[in-house]
Image 1 (tube, helix red, strand yellow):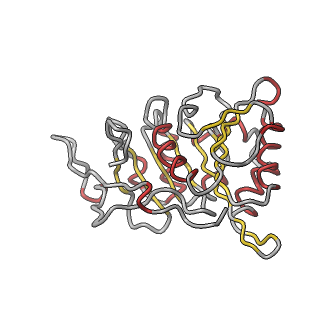
Image 2: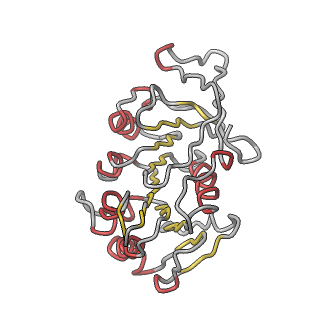
Length: 252
C-alpha cells in the first residue's frame, strides 16, 4: 500500500457561519469564513482529538474521518465502549481477539472482559506500532486506555515515535485519532500531541477550559451550538472554524 495523503475530495468541510437570531457571539469569538472547502481528515503522521458529550455528534464526525482514511490506509478502531456505532461503516470488520487483528482495511477491535483493561488495550496499540505500517488508529474513549498520568508504552510509541520513522529505507507514518467525553480526565499529553481538534458540546466548564488551554484558542471554551455543530481547529490556524453535520451525515 502506497503512503499518500487522503485525497481532498474524499471529505470536505464548508463552514456554516450564519448566526442564530439573538445568539451571535462577540466579534472576537465569531468563527472565520473560509474562502474554500477544507479537508479535515488528519494528515497521515498527525494526530487528532475529538471531544464531546453523549449525543453531541462526536461519533458521526469521527466516522466521516475514518471512512475516507480507510480508502487509503488501514484503520484500526479500538471500541472499548462496545456500543457498536461504527460497525455499519462500509468495509468494517469486527474482531474480538488481538490475534485476529490483521491491520488491513477497516477493523473494529471490540474487546471484552479482561481484554478491555488499560494494560491489554495498550498492548494492542503496541502491536499496531510493531507492524511497521502506515495506518490510522482510532481510540474510542481515551480514559479507558489512559489509567495513569504518564503515557504507557504502546500509546507513547504511537503518539511520538510512530508519527514518522524509516523502516528499511521506506517512510512509515501513523496517525492516532483520540476521543473522549471528558477531556479534563485524560492526560495532558493526549492533547499536546494532537494537531487536529474536533470540539463538540461539552457538558462541564472544566472540559471546555481544558480544550481552550490545550489549543490556546479561547473560543473553544464556548459551546459550538445545537444540531451537531462543532469547532474544528488545526494547529497553526488563526481561529477555529464552526462546522455542522447535515441530515445526510455530511460535514457542511
